[in-house]
Amino acid sequence: MMFQHDEPVLELTDEQSWKLLEKSQHGRIVLTAAGETDIFPINYPAHEGKLLMRSAPGTKLAEATINENVLFETDGITSDEAWIVVIKGTARILQSGDDIEAAEKLGLKSWIPTLKDFYIELKPVQLSGRHFNLGDQPERY
Image 1 (cartoon, one colour):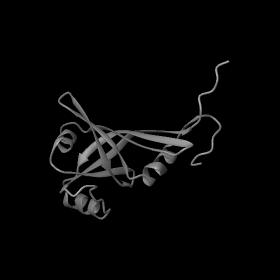
Image 2 (tube, rainbow, N blue to C red):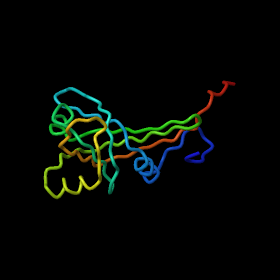
Image 3 (cartoon, one colour):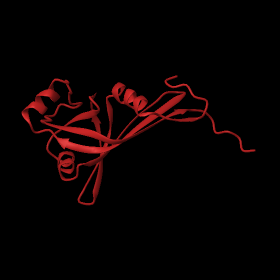
Image 4 (cartoon, rainbow, N blue to C red):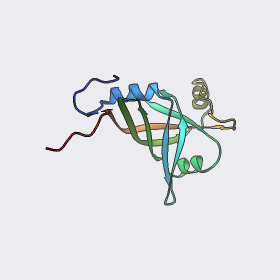
């Protein structure tokens, strides 16, 4: 078991949530602009308290540019346990040469064979995580 607890749900500390973020490499980012909300699967590294993702020109990049407020979610599940981490934060398109050079050193590769020349940094403002012991619903008495 990843976390030991007797109750079905454990609210994770920020430290526990970051450990899960650092072990995972995929999640979903939610972006909103001009009244439209979109969700995108992404891969990322967690580095120095932030997440980094890549993007090609398109909806994801445009929405992150228009509205810096984002949500991010990652999770995992096995036969007997599951977990979820949600970040409310801000997105920033990296533009300085130093920031881009530092991002490239992390070795973030695209999942698909497309050019993704832009880096987006996600800085958490609020972090929440939960761990679940899976099992059957209890009987009502």
